[in-house]
Length: 219
Image (spheres, rainbow, N blue to C red):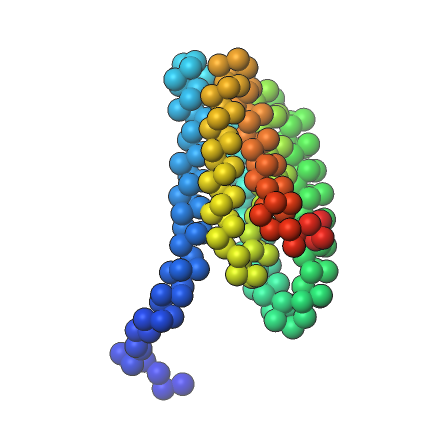
C-alpha cells in the first residue's frame, strides 16, 4: 500500500530463476524468426528473386493468421494457470476442450482462406502476383499445426517444461532446412510451402509423442 519504486530491491535468486525459465523461450523465438527466412533464402539460391516475392506475399498473409492463436494464448494462459493451481484434472479437461475447439476453428479458417486465395491475392496485390495464389491456398494450412503448437506451449509453460520448446524448435528447424534443400530444387516454391506445413506437424507430434509423452493423453 505504501510501497514505492525507490523501495524495490533486486532479488538475484528470483532473477536467475526467471532468466533460466525464459531462456529456452527466447532462443526458440529467435530460432523461429531465423527459420522463417530459411525457405526464402533457399528459394533465392535455387530459383530467383521473383519466386521469393511470390512466396513472401503468401507467407505474409499466413503470418497474419497466426495472430489468432497468439491472441488465444495471451487470453487463456492466466485462466489455465489458475485452473491448474486449483485442480490438475480440471486443468487437463479444459486443455482438451481448448485443443479441440482451436483445431476446428483453425481448420475452418484454413479452408476458408484456401478457397478464397485467388480473391485475396488479386484484391491485395493484383494480377502480377497470380503465382502466389496456389502457394497461399496450400501454405495457409500451416495455421492448424501452428495453433496446436501454441496451445501446447501453454501446457509446457505451466508444467515448467519450457526446455522442450527449444528442443522442438531446433529439431523441427533442422528438419525443415533439410527438406527445403531436397524439395525446393524439384518442386519450386510449392515445395517450400509443403515443407512448411509438414515441418510444423513434425514439431507438434515431436513434442506430443516423443519428447513429452504426457501430452499424448491430452489429444
